[in-house]
Length: 314
Image (tube, rainbow, N blue to C red; front, top):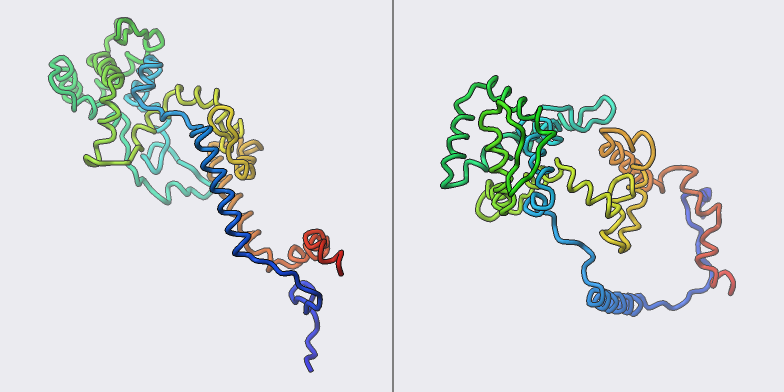
């Protein structure tokens, strides 16, 4: 005869009650069929709520000044991606968790030189344009200090930039080839050629949209659209869908942390929220091993509500 003491938090008592028949195969089949029919019918009636993807072509045609201003920020190194840090460059600390510089630990895995990758290299791919070729030659042969002076002079007058007759126009400035480069890059973007140039760097067939996405995100056009669609972080955007369609309510816990300090204003908010979710996941995973917490379901007697029919009959 066993003399082992019964431990209510660990041991399960021997069940001595009755049993109810249950066909899990039948129930599962019915559930799959019903959900499948509903998915097909709703897809036919409503279609996909997602709007067409934002491209550089669409952006530059809808907001050419914003595009040209962003292109200048790529050239002078002041854009978000240019100063982000790892994994794109060494120009910023990147995401870090307290004293832990996690981004720097990972290192620069996707090297991005904003001036070359977003402006110079795409322009060099354009054929049959003597004026542009001459401007690029002047840029390449100039010293670093001269380039800095050109870009600084153009930046000073960029606040008065206008888009007239299909061209980016700025007041006269001693900016060397920069006005031609920005204007031609805008033309290139409005035709869709820049989308192709940024994608074709890794081969003929590619699904790597890193460069065009970074370029678009550096401007304000995408953010303005996101705000109108209630997709920003401070609008619970992670669980929203475009338009007025319902989104993913199961993501409420993840996006909730973006609404509270310090994550709602921290430059390291992403890694902080990620760390919180990892911690909560570990607590849930090890819940059966945590004394006290594992006893909560037994103490609150929630099981009697779930199996109320059994306990009513008993």
